[in-house]
Length: 230
Image 1 (cartoon, rainbow, N blue to C red):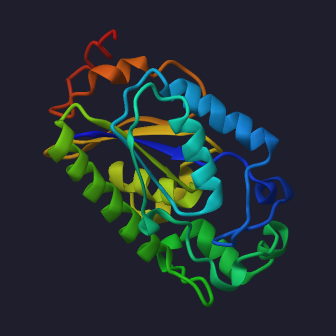
Image 2: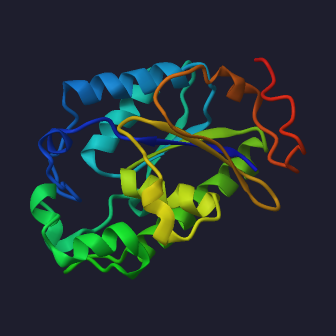
């Protein structure tokens, strides 16, 4: 299958102040976030990506543009509402320190599969829609560009954590063990028999090896010889 690079948006004004922005409009990258997203774009400049699919929220659109600006070609670009932030309902717009006093907070930490945000979405539904969207786009990019195709999905922390948990074969209740920082890069290949996770939560390092595509076939016993040189 094709290879998806999962990129979280850069830091926002809400992130910096400990506010749960959710789906609120007008939440932009701050200067640190713009620098983070530009660095992600610089890293991805060495990879000829065939497309970038983004959450519709402003912070992801800004991150997407900084990635596209650094691509040598003109990748296909689109927006998918299924990659948008979790609907946190009545939690949206509140501070994390305030939310930590709620009884539901401990359930979010230990049993997210049981969480339904008041007036919002369940975390299980969040994972189901985002994983389905990633797999749908991945199959479409492979069908059009071949199995060596590499594409980018720009989304949100909990969304990417839930996609990685699925790819790792982890129950959603374990997804809080995964960290996904602002503008971080994670890499997943969906093989015929199972997904393969090649990187999680990276914010530095050469990605040019992806220009050759990846082999998502059988896992090499003993670990194999590593990536092919570009």
